[in-house]
Length: 497
Image 1: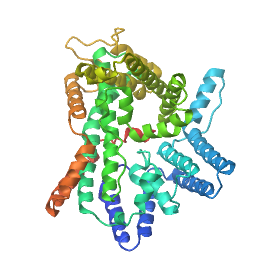
Image 2: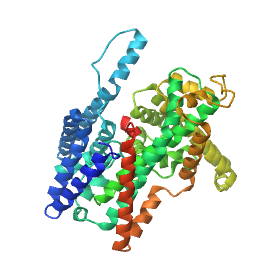
Image 3: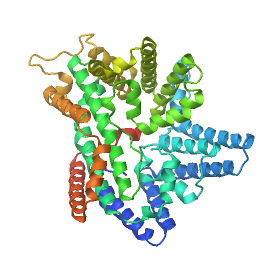
Image 4: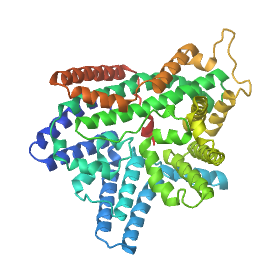
């Protein structure tokens, strides 16, 4: 079920909210069970076949966590942890990477092995990583909440289940144990509707508005056509904007929906395109994934504790696996490898500057800050080409055209670029879209700031809460109707991961 549909906004959400707060006045456990059941229904509405897989994964991991909690420190706990991690990664590997492995093995050895068609369960990457983190923390003795209903709700909670953020048990389970969560709160509700509306606008208007420009160029490149330089740059920048507003829009909607239930989700974005280094970018982009990779992969590998050389190896390995997490494709592998290379270069440069005593002077320089921002954004745009292209050859054609190499498809005499022209798109319109969205991402306050301001504003009086809430509800309904009137409904990009 998509957040952008009439079924969700007009039926599912009102029913779930009403049941949650009515039950919450009588029984916190009953309200939590209601929200858990609604979350399972939400998942099953989209892919009923894999609901049992989700429930089985949740029951297995909770059982392993309880087993660890009841075992003494030492070999028994490690055995439980190993079992849990192996089963989670085994399921994830089968559904997400089995076909990729067999296809590459066939290509390398000239074999013709085949597997039955494997469908990727939506959200499996997110709920697998969420539960692996729970198991690791249980092994470390950091898990103190063992109520099954709260664990089930932590895993299946519908605002985050499909496309994140990747939640940590310490962020969520104490909230489900808080009696105040189960009482209606007007300021939270009105501000939550407003944040949901902002996210909906990002998705339906901004991200989906940019999608045709990216699709026209990348689809042609994957099909074997070399675009013009203008088309390649427009397609790459359009996708850079589309992905940002699509994923940040989903994250805003998840945060806003959670505020309706008096639940706070962690922010997943903090103006990442304003970053002045690739390290800063990863502290701002998909923050929950960056945090998971740091805490549960980079640090256990040794982080920076074992010398500079191994630090760079650990950075490369972490980003390579982070790329593979996004999908079973060499394009994602190269995207991760490219970001790993960026991080190694960034840390190496900072180390040299520190040795020469330049660090503080460079940080204080506005010119250096501007150049660092421009270089970081350029590096990110280039890497997104691999992220978006479905083939390595297609990514290569886009990058070749961006570099101005090769004639490719040349513009017609009137300056018409055929790939966009054939799709009914105009370069000036696309360029204005890109400029407007870039300015919004770079200059306007982000949703974290807007959300905090809206929440403070909604606390002033009942009148302000009613005004904000009704305006946000009207905007949301209008955008949902606009989305419904389209020929097709666009899913969120991160649903594929």
